Image: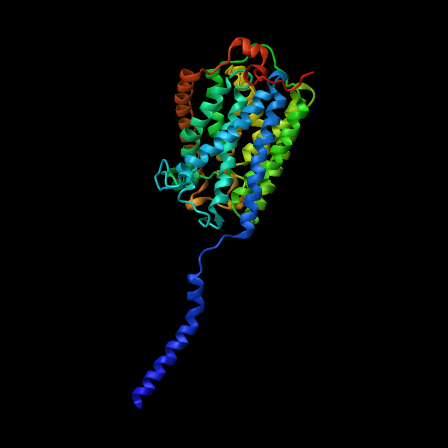
Amino acid sequence: MTTQRIWRGAAAALGLVAGVLAPGLALAAQPVVSDPAATAWVLSSSALVLLMTLPGLALFYGGLVRQKNVLSVMMQCVAIACLGSVLWFALGYSLAFSGSGPVLGDLAKAFLGAAPRGSLVGALPEPVFFMFQTTFAVITPALIVGAVVERVRFRAVLLFSGLWLLGVYAPVTHWIWGGGWLAKLGVMDYAGGLVVHATAGASALLFAGMAGPRDGFPKHAIPPHNPGMTMIGAGLLWVGWFGFNGGSALAANADAGMAIAATHLSACMAGLVWGGLEWIRFGRPSMIGAVTGVVAGLATVTPASGFISPAGGLVLGAAGSVVCFFCVGLVKERLQIDDSLDVFAVHGVGGILGVLLVSVLASPGLGGAGLPLGHGIVAQLGVQVLGVLAVVAWSVVVSWVLLTLTRRLVGLRASDFDIEDGLDLAEHGERASQV
């Protein structure tokens, strides 16, 4: 009788314990699921970032060149979007976001082979994260085109862009966003000041130098054929940048909202400052100047957007506009490099400036989100400087190798006859206008 009571008591106690633990055990057994709100936001952001390349960048660049070269620039943007997406799917995404190596990922996710439909990256389905990153991989090499418009062979653009995506962009992405050595040091690059703008800007300057200038540079200015087209392209870039920076939160949350607010205010302030500088220097502001300032502000705020307050966006917009404005003249007048559409002066310099200033503007005392790894401002600035030096050096050295290879295989510069006739007809057999 006593034994039966003991067993009954033990069974009751076990039942009570099981009843208490059952909900927790059931919760622990549930698989991790994706966040529908985050998924919807990043899907939308992917569309916005692709809009930046097609048609945003194509229109922005197309309006800045002469009419006989409009289609060649647009074709380069379209072709890079197609080629870059396929290469990113095949190899680039895996090299950037798989493996734990300090310098480069592995091929475990080549062709998304180890990323099935149900796999997750944080709270996102991995195909969604892949698609968002694809749009970044597309626009980055497309930015470089602006430095060498109106004189470079189409085959050279294709070959170099494909090699550059795998040789420069994918490794740097792994360093910073894929858990590589700069990520472990705590470098801050919210949406691509280093990954996108510094890599593209440094490589563009080298490409422009190796391709040589357009005829008449620097004595004769080459005016844009359609400032209105450029303004439309800039507007699409501006809107798309909300997905570029806001989507980098990878969630529909306050960080995304703060990133968008800082981005918008930086663009607005930069446009005003650039127009004011033109007013002082030339006696009147121009449409091209205003939208160039807007893009400079957007590039400058990119690495800091999710770490700073909206007021910090105003500071970066003003600083980026002033520095980039004077760098345009420095590159073309002092260095005598025909970076035709100011890729280095606007994107490269703007992105680098934002990477450095985030060390200060992200501090909680200025409304920022704080610095990583317990760093102070000086220590974080040291990490940011190291990141800039490493990324620029890698971009320049690897780009030089790739451009040298491209020159030997297919040549860089179009013939004088083709340049004179216009690359639209010479490379593609079409004209932007038949009138």
